[in-house]
Amino acid sequence: MGAKIGPANVYTQKDLAAMLGVSTRTLRRFKNEPGHRLAPRTLARVKAPLDRENRSFRRYVSGKAYDPKTGTLIKSPKLKLPTLPVQPIPTLYKSKSGLSQTLSIAVDLWSAQQKIDYFISAVKSGRFLSWTARVKVPVGVATSGDVDGEPNEGERAQYYMIGPFTLANDHRAIKKIEKEIAYHEDAGRIVVNLSIVENLPGEK
Image (cartoon, rainbow, N blue to C red; front, side, top):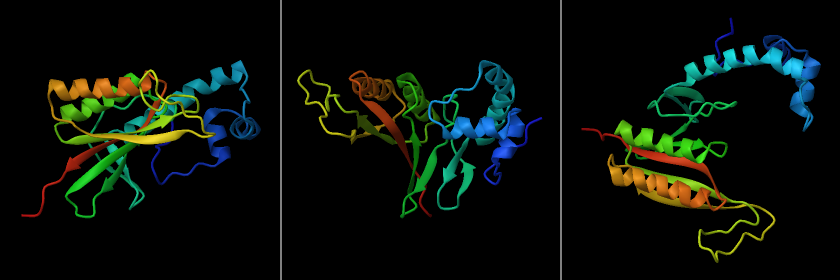
């Protein structure tokens, strides 16, 4: 049975190797040597314990967000997160006024549909009023969706923000989400971060 995974748990390489049933040398090479591949027999052996630990971790973080001020996980709206090898967790930022908070999450490894599903789950929660996104423009990709859009000819990727857009619970808001995500990603750009804003009740 896998150990419960929480923010206070710190595993050494020896712990992780024992958990997966491989040697520390194998784990070290896989972690530190770019392009190193595990043998098929080793991959088959680690799949079951790795899947088990991933399921345990996903249950633990479900409906939670990371609070950078306290360094802990706190209760958060349970939104639709994709199942990925590294489970994504939103980060919660409260405004200085205390009247709003923003959930921000890195989504560069998500599919376009997973990003849309995340936003739609936020819409259905009825708690959020607006969203923004950060978009990455890889080298050689046009900076706009126009046919004659200028390509990024620099040595590094460029970034820009889109939004804010409404998250009202209606058909038009959902269509806007789908249209915006598809517009940028179909052109070869990548939505790398999603942020949703919730207003909080003020003091009475």
